[in-house]
Length: 437
Image 1: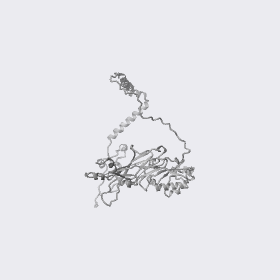
Image 2: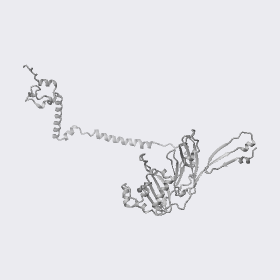
Image 3: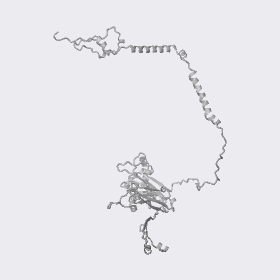
Image 4: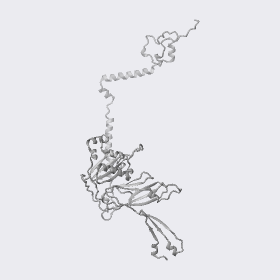
């Protein structure tokens, strides 16, 4: 038999230096010395929580490295192939489907690292935020889960009184979150502003501000908003954008003239028309009176009493009169009035002629007779060839062809078209004589 104490002595815990993985190896060496049964070795892996300590009011950036999670998945079966599995990440607050409101996440492709970033506020100080990070391998369909514990610390420098927000047009948000790029930008701002303390407060993608996705040409970028805070007044260079000349140029969609733009232009293209300078010492706080939400539990008003099964009968005759009879009666009266106006009050043709002046009736009658006469004449008109198609000179002798009609013929009744028969009877072309005659 093995005592309870010896059973606990055979468990060996090995803690790596990284502090994120714990290998729990159970060795059955004591059982081997006491028992003759086969030895069974159980290997299990559990992941310790990673703790981070960001400060309130300061930008927090945490990179989810793919190399860190590759060890959780089996390598390629072929020897010598470098592991380049497509890995995506899913992040959410523990017990909830999404992240906190101040925390954002971005990952462009499955072959790039993911980034968690945001700016916690003083409301989150002292409240540990546990973020569940699930890595998904699209090749093997395996998952690995880690927890990230965010312990937000308070700082005396929060909030910095003077805050400026820049819009950088030639950089995406994931490029700006890189430590070296963000450090270069803060260095350029510090060179222009000359503060004692300068911190990056927040970074926001232009797409989150209603920007449009750029076209995939000329290596266009989405743009990023970077907010920084300092402890001194804004420099004269930053104040130049508030001058009337630059405001006019911005209203005309022209670039303003800023003297210190050359210090940023080498690496950062700043849209100076979108810069925002805020002095929080002069901002009047707005207190909204929110109603007390209460505990969310309905008060006890007793048991629910459903209506009785024996309901009283109801007379629907009055409802019938209101909904059907009254509209039908109104429609019938309107129909009678309309029928009387259209059918019973017709004046008639005789009454109309009596009220019409005589000269107007004579004029109308003459027009009608002329129209009928023209129509009857058009029906009886003979169809013949037009005069323009007849020859003017004889084709052989050159003599002038006599007119088709005599002089006393009434040209007004000449038809416009003549048939082939009429033409042959009216015109006789002389035959060409032989050369001997």
